[in-house]
Each structure stands twice: as structure tokens, then as C-alpha cells.
Length: 190
Ligand code: AMP
Image 1: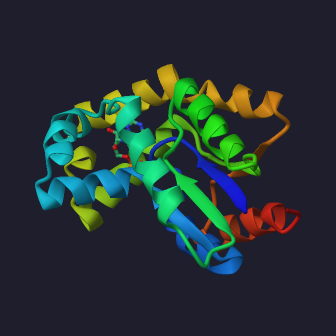
Image 2 (image 1 turned 90 degrees about the horizontal axis):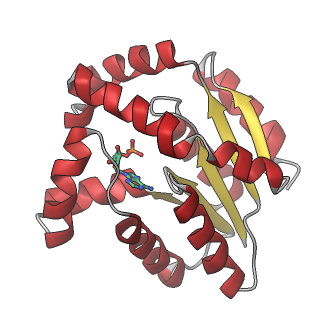
């Protein structure tokens, strides 16, 4: 099984590119953000707990997302691997992920990182707010907190995966098709 980490700041295009990636490589797309929004929409206890944090642009507790991912790993079938989108977002989550895949006798295959500068993050999210209507995209102060949270807690994962020899950075600037081809040319080697 392949275990891909799809990494990048908010608005880098992870969700946009994920569909083509899972199709080409027969992967299961696991987006913790989407899973959390589904919990909120279904009004579950987990969703209720996560809602305020997500709408403030803060991270939900590590155990919450780790539990969701572990459950999906167990129940998946008929795929050749997983595309983890928005997970891990902290070093602690990355360590837990490494342990989870190790227990299955596997390892993280690669971290595919879509990189865009901060100015473009704000522009892309403002654009997405008009299309998708996400509560955490609409308010500038929430977007700022997500950018801050990315730099404070998530960006450190670049070094984590670099040190493991698994970090592959892709320029996220360009058309959807251009970025997709860059991603494919990296993933074709695994
Ligand atoms: P996303 O759709 O990936 O932008 O995620 C939306 C929001 O869900 C984030 O701003 C966080 O509040 C929460 N979230 C998603 N993934 C994680 C994660 N791995 N760890 C903690 N919080 C997360």
C-alpha cells in the first residue's frame, strides 16, 4: 500500500488536485477537513466539539483527527493506497501516523507538498469563499489565524519529511492542469 501525505498551506490547491491523484493511482482520498465538516453537518458530538475550533481557524485536538484516520485505514478496501489531505498538521500527528503505518508493516511513501506564498493563500481562499461557502473561508481574521497556525504548527513538517528523505515540493503556482502534471511527474516514480 502507498501512503501519500498531501501537504501545503491552506488554499494551496490540495482539495482541487486530490481528485485527479486518487483516480490515477487508485487511492482513497482522506481529507480530515472534509471528514470534520461531514461530522458537523451530521450534528454528531465530535462535530459539535470541532465546530468552534474550525470556525476560529484553529486546529482540532490531535486525538480527534488521529482517531478518524485510524478508522478509515481499517475499513478501506479495493485501493492501492491512501492520499492523506490535511493530515498530519503537527509533528505529533506525523509521529502517530508513522506508528500507525509501521504497525501495519508499511511506511509513509512520500510527502507531496504544494507550495504557494502567503499572499496567494489569501487570494485563493477569498476566491474559494465565493464558490464553496465554507464558514472558515469567509472571515479575514479566521483566514489570518489559519495562516498563523500553518506557520506555527504545520510548516515544521517540511523538515520532518525532508529529514526522512520523503519531501517532494511542487510549485503550486499555475493553472490546475500545469500543477497536476507536476504532481504526476513526481508520483509516477513511486
Ligand atoms: P482543511 O479542509 O484541511 O482546510 O481543514 C479545515 C479545518 O479543519 C482546519 O482549519 C482545522 O480546524 C481542522 N483540521 C483539518 N485537518 C486537521 C488536522 N489534521 N489537525 C487538526 N485540525 C484539522
